[in-house]
Image (cartoon, rainbow, N blue to C red; front, side):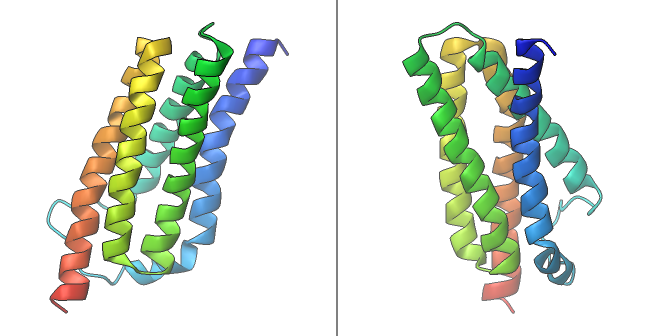
Length: 160
């Protein structure tokens, strides 16, 4: 297998593995969550894994474009390190939200995640504009997730 193909597979596998493990670890919390009150515009349950799979693939492609960009090793390493940090924040958010049911804390965690995603997008743009554009749907989805997260908090913690 050519070196670049192997690197592409790794770049795709990392975010998909993070998402898959997160889903596996939060299955019980997700089941309990089905009975929670949800805000208007909440998508159907089947849409979430579809959207997240697409977003993780886009993230993986973006990280690959940065890795192969030919930028300075130091700058590429910095961009990919922040990328790794946002993946860790993404992973932890699911546990905080679904398993711990700490909806308000999860919202603020999500705001921090959004900031990390924005930083990654800016850093990625320095290496590959295409990589930055691949991150935009993720930024938008996490902003929408913030609306949903806050709605769940308001409907289940404050008004229940």
